[in-house]
Length: 52
Image (tube, rainbow, N blue to C red; front, side, top):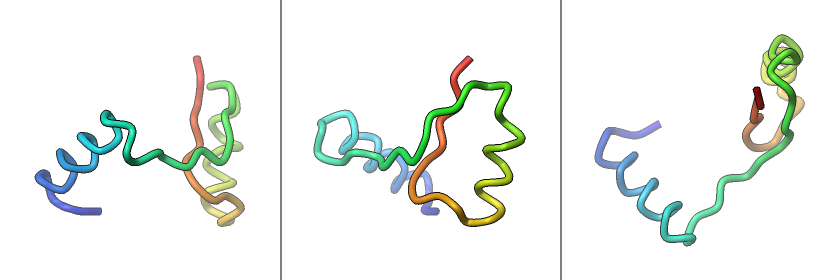
């Protein structure tokens, strides 16, 4: 994690298409507990997205 200025710069790069976040998986919101377990076990590489 960085400071607020770092966050602003990273979001500018994402918006410009110069930096793409790594998405490990997309799960429905009702699988939130499973998502937390994946994070706790380290069984992911990248972000876990929960969809409503």
